[in-house]
Image: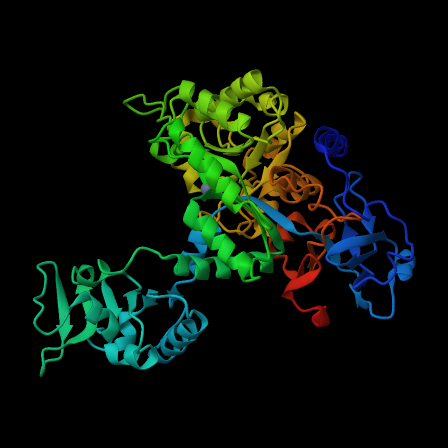
Length: 573
Ligand SMILES: [Zn+2]
């Protein structure tokens, strides 16, 4: 009920434009003949009433009908594809409100050999990787085992030269002590038979000719690695391409990138221009804390240059503190450490107020990083100042991470229209919490770690994000932990602050309609309603019919982006 009334509140505040054509439309001549009809589903719509439906009709990428199997028949024309969902759960595509897909993709899309054994397996992975990533200028990665290369454990460049003759390759061993290079990489680094061994390493050589054989031990790796160029936009495009596919495979259809610069925006644009960006993207432009207000015109220029189509750059990211584990998260009271530090505010709090007020006046949403109770308060105070100076402009400022609260600040999110952007996967007692956090803030303050339910009870909008690659982008793992406050991989552990568990409806809303609200697209996405874009996912199990501990096992079977399958196979449903 809280969320239903809350959603109405959102609509009243922000329904400035008219709803899209077709919204609320009945079946008429104009709507007959959907492109695709999905029927026999258990469709969780996430509309204001959180209602369920059996069928949807889609035309030109938009939902033209939501309702019963009988009702959808009127939308079946001669050319309509009719898909039987066989009782499966369908719901709006997930939206991740805090994620770093370009960096994560570059990292994850390196050539990873860690799960393999034997040179034959390495060979096929490397050549598959090279074929699949024609834009990658340097093939990097690793994870090979010295045990697979016989006595001495030294791999030879000839294997790599045969697989990848034309691009440099450099792959680290599993333990990181040896690097395996091909001839192209050695040539770029200028490593040949005349290159002396460094004092802290060894260039393995052919005993007859003295030629480097392609394995570099310890410090000798640096002779080569210093020539590896900084990540190029081509590498980023390749990384993002990987990430978009991965996110679509989870059923994710929209994101907020928590930190972009111009090159990141170019990366998104490249993929969008190629028609490969099957994801709505809000880019949070990084606020350079070493500069002053002088950067505002540049940020405005970036916004105006890149906001179009699937890309929205009307957000600025301000990192206000570090993390608790190394005492850089800003606290109201000292850490329990000898020097009594309270952490390090990244932007001086009075300046932060002026920055946020200015950005708010310029039409930006501010996306804060705040971990400690002090940084959360500084962020809220800054929004409060912006509201005093500018009035309520409705820019949906949000604070991410929000780990440790002073309880008096919890109601201020609702009061100041600030969205609480939690990373729910972090809300269980792993070593970071038990070993690195609680001993240094004490039991009393620890009660207020990730108080998601207390936040819900204030009526604030709660959105979820993964912070991938910090932790998994898989939303099913995150939803399970939000509900159980346990690791999704350990059902036996105790719930961490069990009174802060939330229900499944709340968790799903945080990943759909509420994340859409943060992404400013809740009139177009985030629920299954007539007139909205058909960004949808079909799951292999109904989240409402299984035990919470099994939610993390869920797989997306089919992801639709504007009605178009971008993951999975309709025929295999
Ligand atoms: Zn982040």
